[in-house]
Amino acid sequence: MKIGVLALQGDFAEHITVLRHLEVDTTEVRLPSQLDELHGLIIPGGESTTIGKLATTFGMIEPLRRFGHDRPIWGTCAGAIFLSGDAHRQQPLLDLLDITIERNAFGRQVNSFEIDLIIPALEDPERPFRALFIRAPLIERVGRGVEVLAHLPEDKERTGRVVAAQQGHILATSFHPELTEDNRFHRYFINLVKG
Amino acid sequence: MEKKESTFAVKKGLAQMLKGGVIMDVVTAEHARIAEDAGAVAVMALERVPADIRAYGGVARMSDPEIILQIMDAVSIPVMAKCRIGHFVEAQILEALGVDYIDESEVLTPADEAHHINKHEFKVPFVCGCRNLGEALRRIGEGAAMIRTKGEAGTGDVVEAVRHARAVIGEMRRLESMPDEELMTYSKDIGAPYNMVKETKELGCLPVVNFAAGGIATPADAAMMMQLGVDGVFVGSGIFKSGDPPRRAAAIVEATTHYNDPEILANISKGLGEPMVGIGVSELPETERLAERGW
Image 1: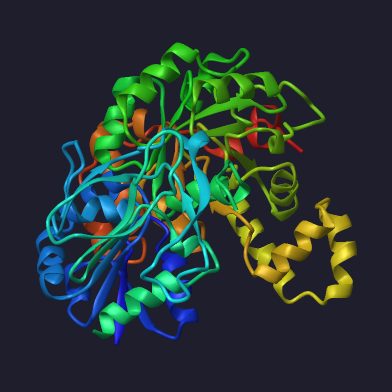
Image 2: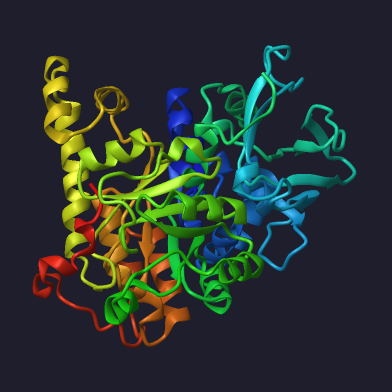
């Protein structure tokens, strides 16, 4: 089994470090031909406009869509935006996950934060998952057949805000499991790839 | 644990999101849009690009907040802005404006010749310049969440960027193989906090993201810096002082991604129009070298 990490821009090296630590064969992906040998793909955090632009220039959009039709993809933050069907803005999107996403939903960098989430789908579900939200997007709407994996704890402002969702073998998180020591989300995705 | 804003992990985390990308100097909202369309991961708002700061002379300060706000309105990518070394009130103003990162920069005229800003006190993260590992660790010790090598801004000559990147990366390599009993003396020699030196050795890399800056003007320059081992690049005058800014900007972005693929690099380097004219750093008198500012 081999899981690639899209390396057009962003924190792909951090994902690769976690995958290697979990003894998964992995590689950086920059061109369409590099997708062939893979069983799953991670689209990292970064700037979604940059990733979308480079994917367009180097002919990656259609190959990524085809890949997502039969193989698992997980997008973190910018990756989640790129997987979505609607980000309220003209930018290249893969439209593999029926969600509407709001970019920079919490404001600017001074409003970036970390928080504990309870994620029932993970191993040891009682144990909180420390999640980093960096100029993070929110999943505003989930379509039919999209399962909500995590939302923010209730707070004064709003409730039930979705930050992780899955539709079949496509997975999206607003936050960055690759930036913390807790690798339960990576193991969850690896199991998805194993099928 | 409850919600916590502006932790060091979150400050450093934004820089991690910029990795493999290009941060472009812009002076107007129009520039910022060109940069975003070209695929920049962030823009750096400043009053004049470094080449013009050199040409005009005088005191270079933080930009007019009005312009910074216009730039923040114009783009969806992060907006950084520069303050003078040691000018903590300029930094407070930039934080109040809501910029995403502050560059405490030697490109502007220093406001304090002995002290940099205590960056731990701010919610907004800082990036600072360095010429070697000691300087990098001093800045991180003061709270910088991202480092860039200084190079020599506004010259279009990459030689200093190479010198500083090689210094930092070479010293890192030396540190990795250094026995623990030598770390205290090494800390003293390079003027860096002992705990930072120790942490860096244990990590096997700098504790924060390190970009290259100062003199990058072509796709080949950007790709060389990436091959030397930096995490991304800043381009200042190199774009908006060239003949065809949108095209050159896009080419530098593409080169930063495909830095290890000479065939792609050859392709994207074709027909970009005139590069910025530039000044050879070796022709520059000591007093005009911006990298000497900061300590």
